[in-house]
Each structure stands twice: as structure tokens, then as C-alpha cells.
Length: 151
Picture 1 (spheres, rainbow, N blue to C red):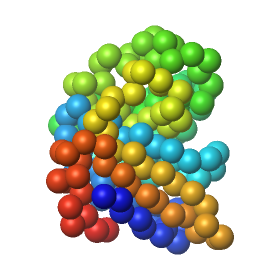
Picture 2 (picture 1 turned 90 degrees about the horizontal axis):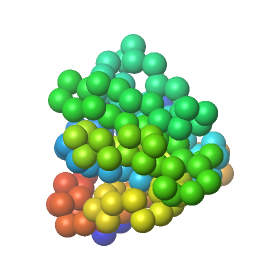
Picture 3 (picture 1 turned 90 degrees about the vertical axis):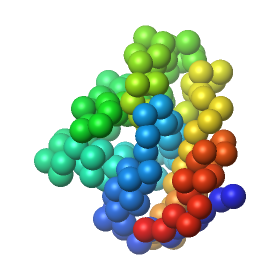
Picture 4 (picture 1 turned 120 degrees about the vertical axis):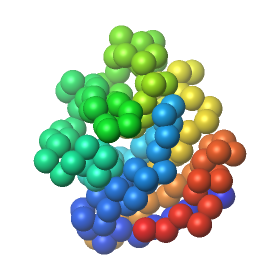
């Protein structure tokens, strides 16, 4: 199963993130794929702000590698692995704590063997002047949750 959505602008990208937030559970991993500037942090901003409040500042973790947020029901970790040299570096970022909350991972392929086998793969790409989001559940649980998903 694969779902595809065309996103006209940043607002639509944030709205998709907010709708995805309603599906999240403790232990979830969302692997965010896409080129630089594809909208991974914009989507994350919509997701985090829908859970933590619109006043929550959601910067890109490009330089810090990880940002954490205290959601009302679980913590949220936003990883940007672009600057990592080896997969083992994720262990220095608190990677093993994410099972108690939700992990949103930009550049997930850099996690290597540490990337969970059950996750939601979300790919963002530019198509002309807009974005396209492709959601691919990896694992049966995500397939059930995405059944009928619209935003």
C-alpha cells in the first residue's frame, strides 16, 4: 500500500503533518525522506505544533542533530542525520530512548542497521511548484492505521 498526496504549499505540508500526528503512538518511527528543501522540517513543524501547541518553536535540527519535545502523551524526537558520518553515531544522540515516544528521522538511511524495520516511510519531493508526499507503511500496524487516511 502506498498513499500519495499533492501539497500546494507550506501550509498544506504542515496540515499533512498535523493529520499524521493523530495517528501516532508510543514507539512509532516516521522516516522522512527527501532532498534538501523538500519540506521534511515543515511537515515536522505541523506535526509537533499540533501535539505541543502552535507556540512551540520547531527549528531544523541540522546542526544540533536532534531536537526533543514534550508532547502531552509522549515525548517526540526530531533527528536530522545528514551530518552523521557513521550509523553508530545515532547512539550518542539518545536513540535508544525513542521507544518511549515518537521518533521523526530526516535522512533515515544514515541510521543503517539502527533504523527500525516497522515504521512509516514518508517521502517528500518537489513536482513543479508544489510538493508530493508519498506515505509507505512498513509493517502491518501502519498499514491498518493508514487504511482510509485522508487529510
